[in-house]
Length: 165
Image 1: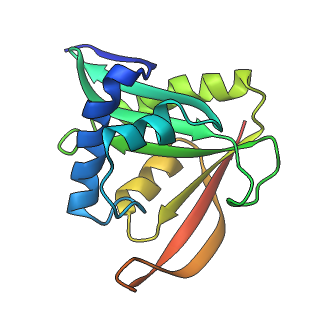
Image 2: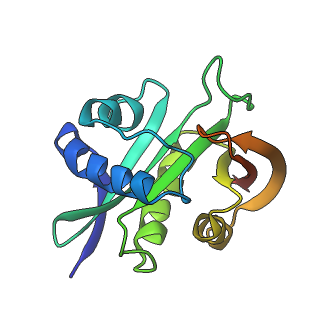
Image 3: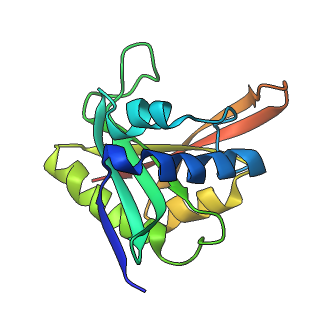
């Protein structure tokens, strides 16, 4: 079994949708609560007008995860112009297989080439795995946003981590 990374293409949208929707269905490890369509994966990740890159990981040609970085956009969170925002999704049952590390090695190189000075990862405080992952990649806590309501009204804190490149 060989783990490889490459840039996402439109042909990856369906497999990416399955991965993200399975994570959303399980709950607790993503801020996303509404299932995605392949079209929304395409516009939000693969061909995002603010996107820097969307990288996928494959094991033996099967898509097992993806990671995107994008520039801040008007009306979104306010960050300095040379920052990027990261999102990482790994297929359930594949956590701990080195997929996130491989994705981040590729993403980090792309971010450096794009002139990014820092990357933000904002994670639900109840997402212990996500918090561990970003810490392992070198991200450090820099901000806490308390009591962000889920769609059902449940308040969940968000922890913002940053990595200076």
